[in-house]
Amino acid sequence: MLIGTDSHTPNGGGLGAICIGVGGADAVDVMAGIPWELKCPKVIGVRLTGTLSGWTSPKDVILKVAGILTVKGGTGAIVEYHGPGVDSISCTGMATICNMGAEIGATTSVFPYNHRMKTYLEKTGRGEIASVADQFKDDLVPDKGCEYDQVVEINLSKLKPHINGPFTPDLAHPVSEIGAAAQRNGWPLEVKVGLIGSCTNSSYEDMGRAASLAKQALDKGLKCKAQFTVTPGSEQIRATIERDGYAKILNDVGGIVLANACGPCIGQWDRKDVKMGEKNTIVTSFNRNFTARNDANPATHAFVTSPEIVTALALAGTLNFNPETDYLTAPNGEKFKLEPPTGDELPSRDFDPGQDTYQHPPAESSSVKVDVNPMSNRLQLLEPFDKWHGKDLEDMRVLIKVKGKCTTDHISAAGPWLKFRGHLDNISNNLLIGAVNIENDAINKIRNQLTGEYGGVPDVARHYKANGVNWVVVGDENYGEGSSREHAALEPRHLGGRAIIVKSFARIHETNLKKQGLLPLTFADPDDYEKILPNDKISITCLKSFAPGKPLTAVIKHADGSQESISLNHTFNETQIEWFKAGSALNRMKELQ
Image (cartoon, rainbow, N blue to C red):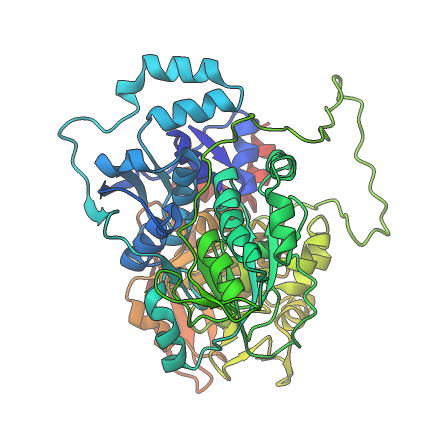
């Protein structure tokens, strides 16, 4: 088992490992020798039969599963892929499927150990691990007769290429139907940009299959109609695709090879081809397509699909193109159909490791001092959060009542904001600027209940804090889905938040909030969401008897003088309640030293 501070840590399920994404504070605990705990997950079995072939790729498996289970259908569960179809999927293809399992809320996803994992380990200099895995292979597959809490069946021989979106990764469409769906819904048909890569889909096989399509187009004298970007998944992939000629083919067809980084997948994209607010369509092989995630433009309609389909749609320049049946037109007027993509699973000449940029930490670090310039805009040493005062939380303001989907991108946007990730006060200026205010359907425009004026969410939060007013956020289902972004919990705490009250939480975000001394609470009756008005005051009572499994009470005080009480559930255990009392998990760790 491995935990990692990224929601896409489950990529490692492609090597048969239990790899779980967590917040940074959880990782700090483990590094400090503190046990890591998790409510025992359910197990969803996905039984694969048939064989992948033609235009269908491993990405289509998880796109189909996302369409079936939705963005919260995997919450509190591990997804275990099994069945005779598994052996037709490459090791990196299994990693793609497990990686994007984060988008259905799964704790992690895992494949059974097989010969493809063995070969991959050997090709990446880990033959000794493969040998040990072989010795224990019977322990690395599902037990005979095991039972699942839920079973999903997918016949790979019948699975068609899929494309999901816009604005959510679980809105699934067969590629053959996306043109008609776009016309029906008013989504722009023209594809402005195709983007391949990201941690989900940037393997040697992915790049090879995309290059095989690009080569067919080049042989006919055709280049991409849309802009086309390529993000290698690692320095090793970048170096190897350059050596083997894939990078040149992708460049020649009109592509730009970007740095080995998250890049546009996390919003690190200085996009120039459309104006802010201009309605447009992009297609990516990424994992997430939330509003404004890739380019900060809320009008961008982003669709996620396989690198092969991205390449085909970038060549065609339109969503209304099915490469299995439709023809492209060469510059000389010749009509031609793309042959299904092909690509080697692993490089025949082994991987080129590329440049070694690793810097080893000092052998002796006890004398190392972290010296931060107090005038820096990029770095700021953290100050401990205040302890709980021992009383009920009275008359808190509703900072914002959020309408609909609220991911960690809505709570703490990435992209250009990431330059402030080492400076909590500065990055807090993006708090909830992407969330929709139910009062006016606006983004980053809420009423300051102390002045009656409208302002940005961070500005109003700062004003409340400066005036000693605590506040809460009220939200909808699956609040905090997406990236395991620690700042989405640090920022509300820093700006005076005390509780986040929602219909349901995504797992990592809920834990992150607990770690920072906030109260993540859920409505015992989801309909009680409707009872809270933006100008209400909320008191959370019974905190002196705060205990595992025992609901808390919220007293809602309306502006007309009336009030009502509702029950709020929580998932705190005894250790986590101590975090709340101490002000944060780090504070509690210090108390115990």
